[in-house]
Picture 1: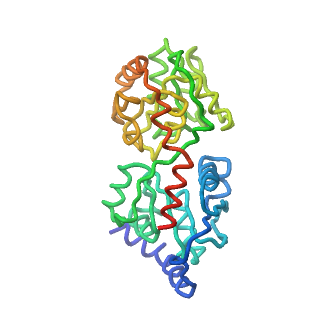
Picture 2: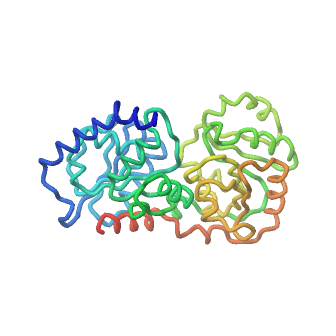
Picture 3: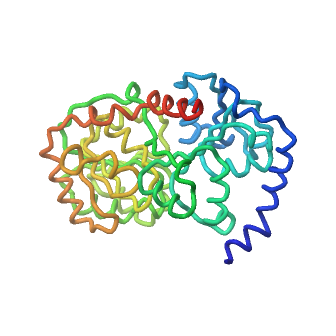
Length: 334
């Protein structure tokens, strides 16, 4: 009830004004679609969202371009729009009523309900899109359960670049992590694995870990190397140092580094969140564990990974930007 009151009083009227304005604009949805605009914010240009928009636009078979604007105003004229983050669609809708007469596809990574963007608010807005890209099966079912029209929910695992990330032979048994610091990245698990597996070298690739109160302890350990805020162009080389890639997060939409590591022939040992249960077959091309698993169990999985001979890269080749973009092209053309 509270969600509905907040949404109706503070936000819904803004969308209704945009919808009213759109009534006086020509409807181009039924005409042949030729142009797509991939939308993100200016601040995303050098971050993962910026990279995703550029990769998808470049791989598209349609006339695709990117648009970056922090307030998401003045979107260029286009037959269709792809929003790399769901909240961007809501803001753009309010500022650009014209998009309501065009094809709109929205990517939804994982739930993060807030006062401003409550479940009621988010589902109402997502039902205004033509399609909602869900990065994993759990997110798709969750959105439908909460009111998203089932025909709008499409499962597409986000992609990586098999030409950028290359195969390497696993030889050293070293392990690694790749993520920015945050509570949902399970930093305590990272700490415990490094501390209690002194025989194995660990690499941590990610920024903001200075916020972790145990980073100094980790950096004092001889089996730990931290790469902070590295240029993305160095990632393939850094993954080549890692044989076993550990993803201990408690909540993810992806995570994309899993695909990057798998394309680098690293064996994934990952928590059951995001698309990990969709792309990893336990014991065949990696290992999975529950999000509340203790570090000792994960240690055993890392040791099991030492014996795996599978060509991991071959099991991730289908998740390319080109294949992902083709799927999106088809949705725009439907």
